[in-house]
Image (tube, rainbow, N blue to C red):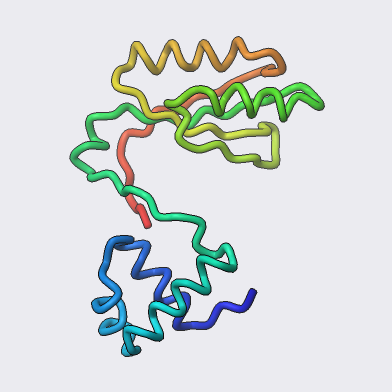
Length: 143
């Protein structure tokens, strides 16, 4: 898959606003509308663009309690633990990492009590050996 500089610029603009009209994208990129539409279709077809999503406002997110939960798992338990974490809707992201922990789960909950219950629930999953949690106080950079 070959990505040009213009493709990267296009992806950056879509990262700012995935609903930006093709005409606006074309104007900002200095390309024709047809060229931009063709690039979008190619990027989608090649799997570079997997979909379009919702970016939540800072006002909404500030009402959520978010946390990073670092998780150490037993050997060969990754598929089962991942599936159980996927079933928890408050787990918004799950990363495999190296080091003393195997996974980092990003959680978003409506209250401290709910967050506390979620962390207990994660710790009770068969194959989870240890967790370490950090509540996110603020986001300094988000791209």
